[in-house]
Length: 443
Image 1 (spheres, rainbow, N blue to C red):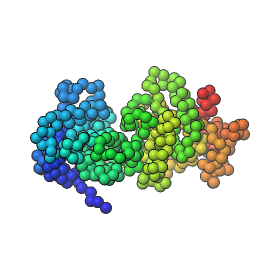
Image 2: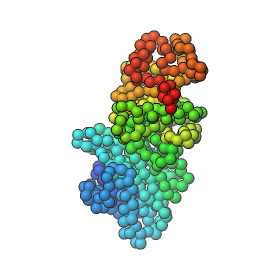
Image 3: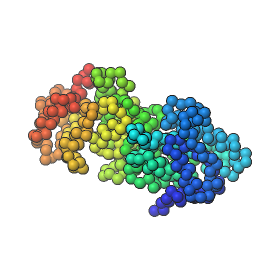
Image 4: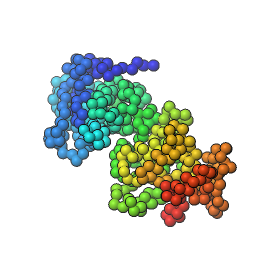
């Protein structure tokens, strides 16, 4: 197993390589990445310039006016400006011997009141050979530490990791991600997007790279859209109503697209969503974690994502299998309504779960699932599919009314065993559980 280098060793190794030379532009949480290169010594071998255009007017003078200062667009402007300036000043004098880089970040670390979203964009534009066309790696990160000082510290670590991995850990995506995640600790920082381009990364599969962020536990979830450029969940969900259809999707059927479309139509018509931004509708594959039992293989997972994307919707890959964790995740980014749309067999599985990892067991789990403004739209399920989900010990306890002519059971026809029946009837009566039959019939 290869030796893990600490941040000090990585920065020093980069400083001692006279061919690696570049600039640092950091906005929002100090110059924490550049500080490592000065701290370890021999910085003159690597650092051409460091800058922190912290004031908005100064930043606008350098990089152009922008409505959002912590954004992908801002980072792109910073990298373009710093790269051009680096080449204008140094290409002639040392271009033949240097592998230039421009490193930049724009972040929002914890404010004094602790009321802001703590996240940032980090990127590097770099050459692996003199005169070569540049390559580029962009990250979006969420800082999870409780204090500004700790967030600054971890930003310095991820910055050094990114530069080091760009130059020394490109054998394959797995090696790169392993190096990128070193020395980050547990629960301090999420990486929920990687965007790559350029000859140094030719042949890398960007969707596989982003899916691996979830598989390897570097983030709770990533979104793989059907067509547009990949964006972080915080940007996709920001202040929007959300509809998620969870499932395994080994065999995609037209009903999956139909119910997602019907659920989106329903949420648009709800009085509470009038005047809000258009809802986001996504399929959701949960339980995507290499350390979990029965975790999917990357190739199989990407095959399912591709099939779902072809149906016209994006996919949320989520690390945990529990739906209540998805509620907590989405709530980080929006206060608008959240709707799950699922078959009756999935609902039975949710209700049967004992939630043993929670002190309050099933009551706590369901309470977290239906927190704030959450409902589950339930579409009919065949008797065969339903019976597959019922544990043998409980199969005789569940009842249903006579099935309709289509041989399907609806949510309001299902009768759960005592004492769960009281809770089930409450969830139906209060519209936490909504049979979707009428939605499909009026489509």
